[in-house]
Structure formats: C-alpha cells, structure tokens
Length: 194
Image 1 (cartoon, rainbow, N blue to C red):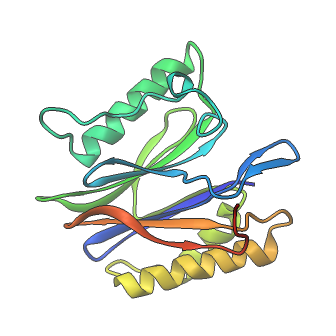
Image 2 (tube, rainbow, N blue to C red):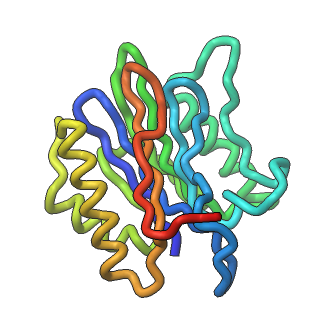
C-alpha cells in the first residue's frame, strides 16, 4: 500500500512518501523515511521491496556524490542505466521519483520505474495511493505553484489517501529541494512510533 508522489513548483520540487515498512499483512515500522537525500540538492523518493528491510548491498545502485556533482538529469540517467542493467540480471522491484535543483536549470522531477523507464515530469506518483494523488494533481496542479499551494496539494493528496484507500498508510514524510538545498519539510503523522 505504498505511495510516493511529487511535484515541481516555482523554484522548488516537493517529494512526499508514506513511511510504512510493510511485508505481506505485517506492518514492521510506521516511521521509515523513504525519501533519501542523495546530495545537497537532490532527493530520491522510492517505493518497492528493494527500498527498506534489506542490506545496503542489495539496494539498487544510486548515484553517489562525485568530485564534480552530477546534475539532476545526469543522476536520473545514471539511475535508469543501472536499473536497466539489473533488469537483465537481477531486477529490483523499485519505483523512483528523483527531484533536484540545478543552479542554471532550476527544479526538476524525474520518474523512473522498475523497468527503467525514465521521464522528466512536473507531477507524478507511484503505488496504490497514486490513483488518488494523480487525480487530485490533475485537478489542482498548475505550473508555477507557490510552496504554500504545493504543500496544500500534498496535504489534499494525503487526506484523500487516508480517506479512500482501504489499507491507508498512517504517516507521511514531506521533503523539498530548492536553491537552498534539499531538506525535510514536515511529517504528517496519525500514528506515533515508539
């Protein structure tokens, strides 16, 4: 019942994800952060079995900070290439939204699915919650959104998931990336962890 979604606004990108670590009918954790900071100006939101609960060497290869930092597009293409290579050997069941901010380009968001499809997008979602998020985004998203409008839309998506998905994840993490860097924005919790 995972959900990762994101959008690009005026000078920033937002990525939000549920924080449940689930296997079969069991919930192992409700505070798993599925939005990773790749470097100072890149976020990677991921859903799928290869995201949590495995040893780091079993996770999909991710772009690591280089001597010369990768642009967001280069990081997305590297990740797509690694997933495409793994697809023919030992595939990863992972879907990714990669957001970043590049000084000369601005914010961007990339969709990379488990079969290594790559698209630059303005808004997107993965998981069962995507059925609700994408319809909310189709209705309320517009280019050039302010941060307040974007967070309001993220909150609408979370409320729609919580009210309509049969087994809805209780907690979500929201992160943003802009000219000042990538950082955690907020958590939306309905269940506190120990």
